Image (cartoon, rainbow, N blue to C red; front, side, top):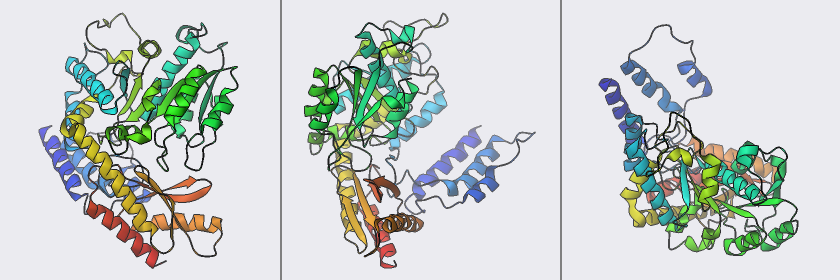
Length: 462
């Protein structure tokens, strides 16, 4: 066993040290990977040492270098040293962190980590929280609490009586929302047809006029979901105007702050989220801007009673804890790893000032990449970053928009093929674009220079 662990440690160390030099994108093809891994279930076992050796040798070419500083495709953090090491310990300790009784230290560490997160983001200190598998489940947890509270306000106990025959709920949300909102609404039995899109302005924000028009219909219970940085351009809705309007109409306001909520830690950028603390619930990810390893989502809910009512459960063989915090009262899982421990480690390593510096640095680097590639022949800046997300488009003079959609996608592939940087495509306002997303603590000025040079090398050969 120890030999296998030694091999894993050496393989992990080699992977981290090679991030700067290897191709950012995976180099193995689908056929290569299936040749390596697709095989009948073996009759006889293999030593742990050989299993790990083969995994290291055969999987590495099929892995993106998303832990490194030259990965800009999706909002994926890189795993701070303390957070990664803490995550190894979480796996080694092998605790079920659902209850205090099943893992006392995990419960207390997560309790502290949750309080630190609320303090860092300057959200209500008396709010409840949960560490989930990602923002998808953080949305579901928060909106389950919203569902419970809204239906309770009209005398319906959804936890006991379900949704059959319950008053209708509608979900108002931005036309720039993330798809995880749709899935959460589906999972909760509210249904995607309950979603009403609010048109955004040219800055990607829901306007007060659009919300006012939607709130004129008071026939249904209402959830409002707003963006604290959408995934394409980092747009933040005008919370200080919208949230009081929604509350006056009796709506529950939920914030999708998957990465953008961490801008609250920056004195330079927190004004973009002015008033976000007025909401009823918030969802964010630790594995994005906080740079803890996958997976880690965080739900924060102002109404503790509604949150607990939506999540808690009990069984005869589990004694409820009255003094300590039982995570299962706030989470949708009964078997869960202690995701809050890497969060605790990351916050202790960085401190408030370190998180602020990380946010500010990523925003500055995103602007440099967008401006640098955007200045090249054949490139166009679609959206300059307000935070750490920007959009670029590529094309040829005289080509149709559809032709330049294809040029954009082809250019992204060619830049990625250099191995120097890795970007992803998106559709924004009906047109294809290249997203520039900078969220990794490892990204450096040298990485930015390499990304711009890769863009220049491809565009000058076009």
